[in-house]
Image 1 (cartoon, rainbow, N blue to C red):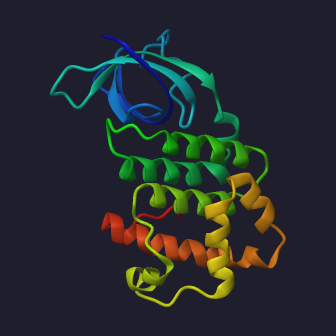
Image 2: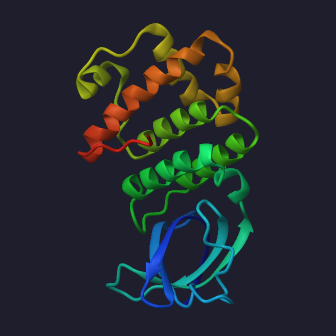
Image 3: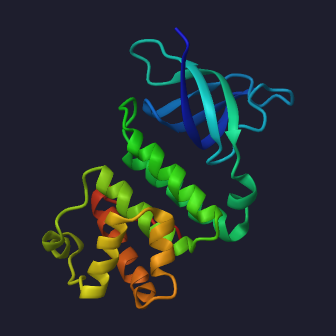
Length: 217
């Protein structure tokens, strides 16, 4: 049976002579990894829809006991390509896509991940500070994945004292505000200088969670 869902393309890679392996974050199924047959052909039905963070309608079917689905169609809903493809943005969004691939489980529905990506993409495209959006995204993907502990336990996890009052404040604001509201609130305030400190805390936590270095620069 063919199923339909909405999603974001995270990565596509060559597979065989004419196909591509496509990895998507979906609204209803968590991560989906599957084969887009004929996607490398010039007149492929997948043409123009497999760029990183393209928002798409996905039509697929999955045989039992198989990890890879088969994509029947992936139809473009909205493209962020012009924004993401800028040299100063591409590395950042590649990093965010890899975080999703590492932390979001396959075939486990959790719409919150989808909403997080959508909100952060829209905020970033509307000229929000990309460092603020990256911090916000790192915080929330770790929180949704169950890896953000209480503030009292952060020092133990990151192996260093990390929370002054202003640093703590940016975590509290990230927890309460949308990404665009967060970026607007922090930009130009005394909290702006705390973003790099906060990201260092989150990076240390990511290294502990994934048990490997995993940086965007």
